[in-house]
Image 1 (cartoon, one colour):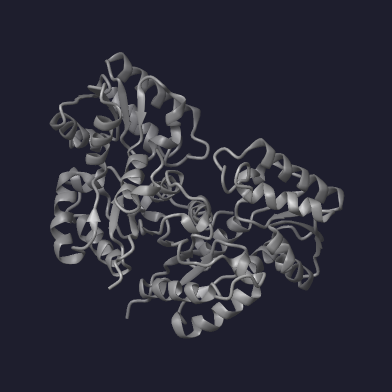
Image 2 (cartoon, each protein chain N blue to C red; image 1 turned 90 degrees about the vertical axis):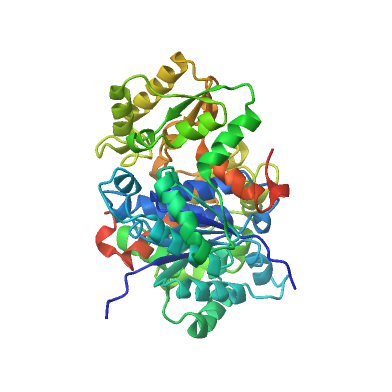
Length: 255
Length: 255
């Protein structure tokens, strides 16, 4: 019997740009001499079907997005997907991810579902062993559920948050304000949103952060990781792209 | 019975960046107040499975890529896709597209498969009615099979090609040279590749082109359509994105 060729699946649409960005980063992180050598990927981007993750985590909505996500995993499984990732921070909150793993046992047991937050913490440990204090830029929902905080602490890393609650609110506005936020204006990002993000990074550095996690998939649109040296910028979407390659075609992962 | 909600399918992977670019342009051309209002899209990007289109059209390979593409259409159909497009110019060459339409009758009769080149000609007629002379930037294969030329002429438009065969070869190199071409270096594009593309545009303008079709999915990576006013830049990927929206959720198509 022929052994199954790996196929990468992406649960996107949360928001839609994040899934597309993850797809682009898989291409960017792959060693390929021509089109045909690039890796096979299926992207599901059905934002209309996936309920708001933050609303559910904050108790404002009762339907767990895990139900729809497990249905989509089943669809990916039928197509032959072997490894999958979700381009969304909030969907990794334990009430969603934990339920999804349970539902997946029946729906799509053959798919290896990666955990973007675990992979990000692992990445920092492996690639930046000198870092102990890690800043977190994120949405209010992600701060509230301590999505990164707990996993960083489990890995003996110290999570650093922006100083005051007002700073967190401002950051949330920079992401989601309908007039000037990144979700509404991503190409180009408004200078107002960009300024807030850069100030928040400055704030985290002042508080001792040696690395900063861009813990919302909109943030890399405002910050080119490569333009800031100190602190080190860590983009979980790029980390997940690399993890998906490592779990499918490890020989084609760029150094 | 519930009427079926439209679902957009993309046959990507030809090359992989083109499929991702089409996905991004669907988002950019959609009116949506939040994540949930963005349109549902499934992207198949399996570059390893689709044989080289140019090789087939030039008689250097015997397996018609239409066979694999019709299989992928069948897969999209099972997922509920109602309208689909291909992010690849060469795949619209008649020996491929014509065969695909035939195979589709059995494989995925319910999907409306759009034709990017038809849509591009239609777009020029509708949005730029004053234009009669249309320049074409493309790969050697696309020039050879007169992919755009014939359809432009059928619409009473005059196709303009870069002056000499040397210019066409240079343009091909700007796209596919392994050292400095756009396929190998897209972020950022090398200044050498960019210079060739801009010179070719200049050349077409000198020959009377009032509009220029960026007839290879790599070209928009080197040319921001909005940075050149004269001639008018036409990006078939963006045109196809808009056509996919118009055929699924017309009320959400940006002006």
